Image 1: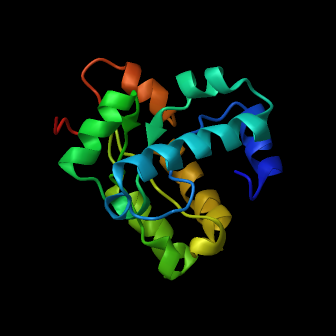
Image 2: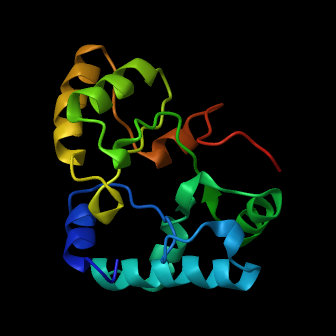
Length: 168
């Protein structure tokens, strides 16, 4: 968020749900317990600054964590739970960071999506140069198929639906 505060502020002001992905994008198992806690806290502080919010509000509301590279360990899940974070994983990943082509990535999303799916697309220097075009191709098609887009928070609130199986 320190790298692109205007983007973060725009995302927040448009009403999108904001989650944590780690401040340094290092795989969580490579961090010590204190480094992980500091990493997530630093991300929340950056979000608060960028979005011009009080830090306690961000600490209360911005608690969803999707790990870089999708790596959790049982101990990390335990720590996140103890610290009040909610771990989140994806179920649809078109490997857009390797740039397979817009239509290929869009087809992967369309083929993998089902009710309750969490779609992950990448932007920025992680290889997501095509993210806007992929979204432009897939969103109308998914809407035509009757899917509805909701926030992660909405999924947490739905009875019996969680963004990550319970490992704890």
